[in-house]
Image 1 (tube, rainbow, N blue to C red):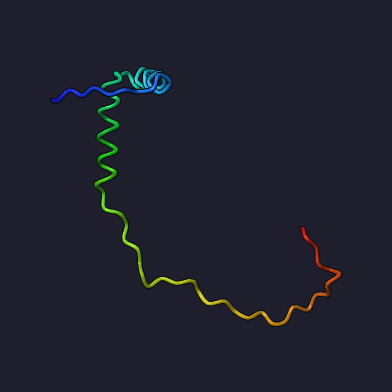
Image 2 (spheres, rainbow, N blue to C red):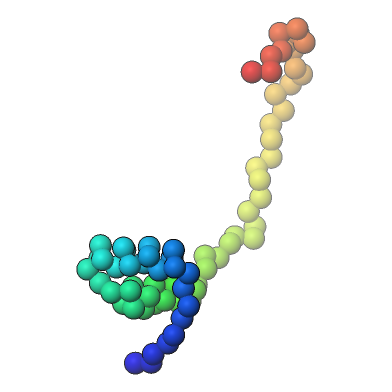
Length: 74
């Protein structure tokens, strides 16, 4: 196992300490788990998009027949 030294802002470190305590873990273990999850997410294949998809075509509803004085903003 390798050792690494990192600098973390005080406020972030305090949040990590609280979370580690809630999880009955340590800050180094929390950092290690976080790094593993982050790397796993980065290496997962992204979903393939269907390049053939397009918006459906609209349907004509005919002329607008309501008189202008009946229009409302909301």
